[in-house]
Amino acid sequence: MDTKFKFREHITYAAEKCTKLIYIISKSVKKFRHVFLKMIQEAAILPLLLYEAPVWIDAMKYTCNRRKYIRVQSMINLRIAKAFRKTSNEAFCIVGDTTPILLKIAGAFRIYNLKECRRNKTKAIDREVELKNWQYPADEAKTLEADEHTDKLIQVYTDRSKNRQGVGSGVTLYI
Figure 1 (cartoon, rainbow, N blue to C red):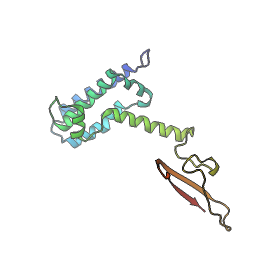
Figure 2 (cartoon, rainbow, N blue to C red):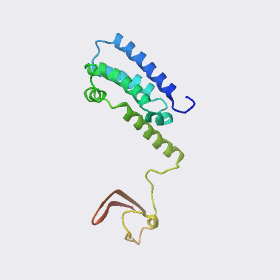
Figure 3 (cartoon, one colour):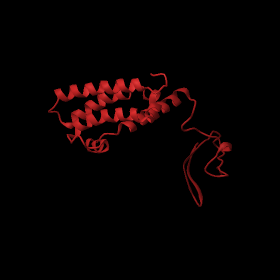
Figure 4 (tube, rainbow, N blue to C red):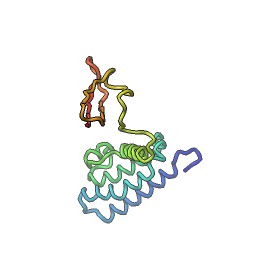
């Protein structure tokens, strides 16, 4: 970590380590099919690149850091796709059927946030809301009362889509 919290040293270290690994793999496995190279990328290179991504994800807003990771992904995708060196990284990703590294980093960050929210229970993703605290989908909700059952649970789901009639929703009543 550097003094300005740009994580430049970490990103440089991870990119150089992956570059060396790619050169070693490419020398020893020249005759492997692209499926094996893709498996090696997912098992060896991506974990090195994505290590502690939620901590340094803000460093990807700097172009120099993004370029280092894109260069590493282009190197392995070049070997997977067996294409020309001048091909763009986006084309490598399409031909090699891989996800761009910047999307992988963002996905790792989202997964980390979801796991942390569930573990700490600080922010509920899906939660049950009492009828009096409904914000969506309607101003007023009607429920049917049954005489033989006293315990009820109502769950309301919405996709927040709006049209002229109102907001679409689904209601589940557990009796």
